[in-house]
Structures are given as C-alpha cells and as structure tokens.
Amino acid sequence: MLKTGNLTVLPYRKDFLAGKKPEPLDPILRDPSYLKKIWMQSAEDYLSWDVLEPKKGRHNWAPYLANANRCHELGLHYAIYPWPHFYPDWVADEPGFTPFVNIANGKPCRQLSGWAPFTRRAVDTLYRMAAEKLGSAIRGVYVGYSADYGELGYPAGYTKWLRKDPNSGKGWWCGDAYARADFRLQMVARHGSLDRLNRAWGTRFTTREAIDYPPLELLAGRASPLDLPAAARRRLLDFIYWYQDAPARHVKEFAIIAQRHLPHRAYEVKLGHGHEPAYVGYTASSACRILKGVPNMAIRSTHAAIGHPQLKRVASAAKSYGYGFLSEPPGKVEKEKMAERIFNDACCGVSAYFDYPGNPHAAGDAYFANIGVLDGSQTVVDIAVLFPEADHFLRIEKGYPDLWFETLNPLRDVADYDIVDERMIADGILRSYRLLIFYGYPLMEAVTVRCLNGFLARGGAILWFQHATSGQSQPEPDRPNALRTVEGQVIALELPPTEAGGGLTALRISPHSEEALQAIERAHRTLLAARDLSDLEIDLLTRRDSVWAALFDHRILLYNAHREPAALPSGASVKNIAVRQILVLPRRSR
Image (tube, rainbow, N blue to C red; front, side, top):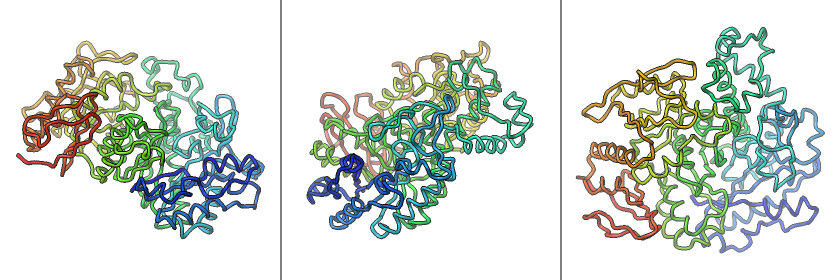
C-alpha cells in the first residue's frame, strides 16, 4: 500500500492555534488528481489534542470530518495518528496531570509522562471520541506515544518548531513519582528479591522503597565502562534497559485502549530517531518483543532515505519477531535518492510505503518506474552483523558503535545482511542465520557469549575481526578469543573452522579493511553455493562493483550505486545497469 500525510499538521494547526480560521480541508486533498497521479491509496490525519479540544468540552472536529469525507470521495483509506502529548493549556490544571520530569534538574517539559494514570485516561478519552465521531471512516490507526512526534522514545526537543517547550531536550525523563515506583517494582521483579538486587548492584538498600536510579555521574557517561566495577555496570544497564523498554510497554497499553474503541483496524507504531544513544529511550528489538500479542500491529521506521544500516536495524527486528514492516522518510527525498530509497525498502521487506506527496511528484520516473518492486517479500539473508548492545549503551552519549558506518556501508557492496543485538540473540534469533560478523572486543552480557558458543556448536559460523576500537578492552595475552562480560567474567569462543564452513574465524584486522571485505566475500560465496545458486547468480550477489544486490526466493534485485553505468557478468540477460537503476532478474537454478 502507498500512504501519505500529514493531514492537519500544517498549515491548519499553526493557523488555528494562532487564532485564525483556516480552511478545514487539508491542501493535499483539495485537488482530486494530486494524490491519484502518484498512486496513493491511504492518507493519515494527525489528531492533535490541542486542535481537537482547545477549550475544555468545546471540540473542533471540522478538519478531521472534512479530511475523512474527502478521503472517502477519493477512494483513499483514512487513518488517524492521535497526539495526546500535544495537549491544550487547560489540561495542565486537571487533577492528576503528570508531565515528564528531567531527573537532572527536576524540571518538567510539556509532554505527558507515559507512566502516569492521567496519561492513560487521556489516551482513552481521545480514542473514545475518535471512535464516536469518526469510527466508520477510520481504516487504520497509528498509535502515538506521548513524546515529540509520537514515535517511541522520550522528549528530545524535536518538535519545538511546532510548539514551545523550552525544557524539552536531551535528558533522562523519568523523574515523576509514577516512573520511580515502576522502576522499583520492575527491578525487584528482575532480580527476584531485594537481597539479590543488592548483590548484583553492590548496593545496601534496606527497603524496596529506598531503591533508586544510578547516580547522575554514572548516567552522564563520563566513565569508561571498563573503569566501572561489574556491579556498577549491571546497575547502569538494568536502568537503561528499563528506561528503553518503558515507552514500548506504555504504547502497548495505548494500543490495547485504542483497539477496545476501534477494533478490527490495521495498527502501526512508529520507530524513529537518527541515532541510538542510551537516553533516546527505545531499541527496535525491545519494542518488537514487547508489542508481540497486539493484534494487527505493524512496525514503521522513519529512517527511509537516511541510510541502509539505520533502516536495516529496525527492519531486522520487525522481521525476526514477525511484523509487517513499513518505511517513512524524515522529510524531503532528493530525486537522485529515490531509487536507492525504494531499493533499500525492498531489501528490508517493506510491505507499505509512506511518502510526502512532493517527493514522488519531484522524483518522476525514479518513483514510477521502481515503486512496483515493493511487494513485501523478504530477502534471503544468511549473514547477521552484531550490534553490541551492552557495550554501546554503557557509553551513554554514543550515537552508534565506533566504526559502525565505516564497516557496514562498504559491506553492503559485498553482501546483504541483517542486524541483530544481544537481546535478539538471547531470544534465539541466530537460528535464522548461518554467519555472524562482529568486530572488536565489546563488553557483552554473559548470556550473549553463551549463545554465541551455542551457535558455533550447532554449526554456525562467526567471523570475528579482532581489531579493538577506541575504549574497548584489549585481548587477553594468552586467550585472544575470549570476551569480557558485563558481569566481570572472561569467556572464550574457541571452536575451530570446519570443512562445512562453520566455526570461528578470528582475524586481527580492521573490519573495513580490504582484507576484511575479501574474507566476507569468500564466506558469502560459500554460503550461496550451499544454496545451489548458479555461478552467475553468485557473481551478481558478491561482486564488489558498487552494484548492490539482494536475493529473494523468486528474484534478484540489483541497484547501481556507482556514478557510472556498470557492466554485469557475462551470461546475464542484461549487459549493463545504468546509474541509479533498479534491475529485477528472475531466479535461475544451477
């Protein structure tokens, strides 16, 4: 499905809150041919609470009714994206009102705490009103969280251009009483008792009520994880994982509320942010794990056209936990980037595509000639790259692990890959892959290292580039294949390579060196040969010529990322592939 938006955000919301009387119908719906020309099938409307109920009890349904009716006339699915966090001023005076609070300075921002009962009541009211007024028109629901654009995570200041919120920005937004109570409850449940928690954390809390967050100096991330005692690392990671999981737990509650009022619709949750420091407040895998069991739920990434690794990070989790996957760009997509965006979407199994109308109109043939390759089918991927979750999040400010993009961007020319993190590995995700790539000496959870040894024992292969990155531990002099764990243990991976291609291959080289790429190419060719692909297909999928390739059950997709036309191997049905062209080749058996 092809989707668009964002109705009622601009210019309506801006003009309405400025006291003007804007035209209710959104501009992109006024010309009946505007969306038909780009084949759009669905439009989403932003139900912003401050527009819907600017005065208590006085509702403004005019834009939403106008948009819903026009979508019906145009044959478009009408979907809603409620924004409870953009509340009108009068809400702050209501009993129980609880905003997010920054623990560093005690200041609230203008967004509702996901932990507070008041927020759940507000969400319930918003969906109940939407069902009563728009119910029969609504075909889809995008469940928004109570921060910034409604995407999972915490207040980051991204929407200050839409509404003044001077305190919003980077921070730890769990200072309200409900958040602290939830932390105490979850931590005791995690460890089983207060005594076990104290032993794990090296603390001396005498009552459950005394359990507190890690000290602010730890949360500032100034200390290297290697310099911290194992107990301090455990306490810090327990807090980070709780903090990251909370928005997903809350939005699951919101989704259950929404489905009570609006059952039997298609539902989505949006995952965004352009980087992954610990304080952003979600990981794709934890969101997918926690949302399991919510009917008709799909995952949307707002990383389209940012970069393949960012999109793959979310797509890999969605695929692993069995969700439909959608993509959305953060804004303008240049014409020259449109084909690449569509190719990456196809490689990530995108089943529904969202775009702002101006992008397809401007892209022209780059859009119309390629959009048909998005059929929701999954690529055949044998290779996973490890996202070293524990080590990364202990480095609080890091957006991504060192050498992440320097490694993954060249890798895409050698092989398609998925990205797995430690909690995915603990869930058994490695059973879907035959080769795991990781680099350096990151601190890992002990359970992760045990799972890696289990993967090797089952015949899996690990390609380990033993080039320690900045701030990582150095190899043990007498045990170079050993890893340090968060808990302070040292556990070795020591299964030699086998004739079948499994086992551990450890190379003391940089993961983005020429030698590393050659090693990955050799391993990839071995894996493809085991799938009984023809020599030509193997060449197409492994050649390092800036022509990216993806293997599906029924086809091979190629995309020329080079600045010049590229020649294809002898025997291919097409001799050349043009710059920024997507080429579809049917599968051929040996």
